[in-house]
Structure formats: C-alpha cells, structure tokens
Image (cartoon, rainbow, N blue to C red; front, top):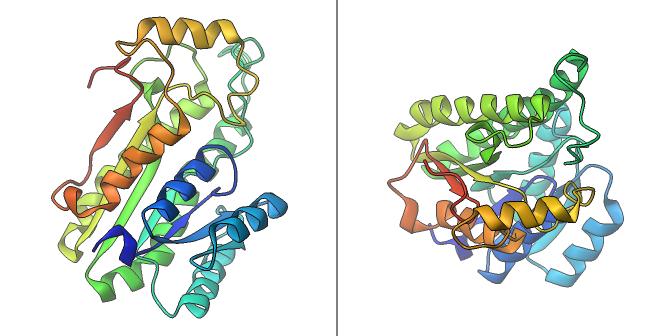
Amino acid sequence: MLIAEQWVLVTGGARGLGQAITRALAREGAGVVINYHRSDQAAAALAEELGPRAFALQADVTDTAAVQKLFAQAHERTGQAISSVVNNALVSFQFDGDARPQIGDIAWQRFNEQIEGAVKGALNTLQAALPGMRAQGFGRIVNVGTNLFQNPVVPYHDYTAAKAALLSLTRTAANDLGPHGITVNMVSGGLLRSTDASSATPEAVFELIASLTPLRRVTTPAEFADAVLFFLSPWARAVTGQNLIVDGGLVKG
C-alpha cells in the first residue's frame, strides 16, 4: 500500500519529533491521525495547517480504554481502518545529563513510568490496530527507539531500559504478525536537534555528539522522520523486526 493510500496514527504527533513525522506523512499524501495527550492547542493548529487529511484525537496511550476509543473515533471520521501506527509518544522526559538520577538512587517508579509509556503504550496501539490490519491483510507499525542501548554515552537508566524492552516487543511482535501482512520495525535516533526532550541539553553536548559522527552534525527530527517513512512504504515490504539507527553514523549496528 502506498503511503498516500494510508491512514497513519502518530502518537505524540503534535510536538517535537512527532510533529516532524506528521509533517513528513502529510507531505507524502498520507492521512494522519495526530494523537496527543495534553497538547491540544498544538495538535489543533497542526491539523488545521495540514488540511482535511489530518485531524487530532486526544488519548493517553497508557490507558487501554482510551486507545480503543481513539481507534473507534478515527474509523468513524475516515470510514477506514488505520493502516499504520508510529509509536512516538514519550512520557515526560528531559535529556539533561547533569540532572539525571544516578544508578545508586534512581527510584523504580521512574522505570515503571517509562516502561508504561514505551511498552504498554505501544502494546495498546498495536492491539487496537490489529483487527483492522488483519482485515486489510496489511499493517505497518514503527516504534521509536534510541541508540543509547548500543552506546549509553549518557546513562539514562529508566529511558534506555524502556526502549530496550520496546525493541524486544518489536521483534517478537514482528514474528507473530508477519503471516498477516503486518510488519513491525523500530527507528532509533540519537540526540536530535532539537525537540522538547532535548531542549535542556547543553550546547557542548550537541557539539561533542556532532564531532563523533561521520557526518559531523547532529541529526534533525525531519531527517529521522524520513527514515520512518521508509518502513511505511512499499520499499520496506520485506523488512520486519529490524532496528534502523538514524544518528549520522555515530553507532554502528
């Protein structure tokens, strides 16, 4: 299925990286359901800007019933099943290495919050999307990961553990869903310039990361978004269970 023929749900799609992914999809002609939790004004403004093939729906992705309702509302608006899901929503988090909790005193609650957001959120959207995808014999799920579990240059323990668990879910789900024509992949970035989550990152860190990459610069949200489009396109029809690292070549493999 061409991107322009799809309705795609982007969780956390109104701000930061999610907004870049939403814009990239709209540019390619996709219909986009912009999910948001609290960013109602940003979501409404983005939907209005992008036109009739974009609209915003509120849901906390960790709330199973709310996600089921979101899918029902989307179907009512479009008359079609959601064909692709981009799991981008991030529980409130700041990439600020100086302020991060250390391993000796970090509370389990922080791990639980990140796991709920990353893993439970993705599971909720996957399960809600599954009936429609099975009926179509087609589905694309892209989970947003991180290069930090290959290269924990800054040890954000809770965030990194949750994204590592999400990679595991990506691969096991890919195995289960492949016979139904549904692929499940991950796109993992490094530090992005800039998103809400990286707004607290000191400029010196951006400069250090840039100096270590073969491209000598920090990846942008728009560049990351283009890699997401690959997995939604026909070019990736035989690719599933993979983790594509988009960080300017900083991490290999």
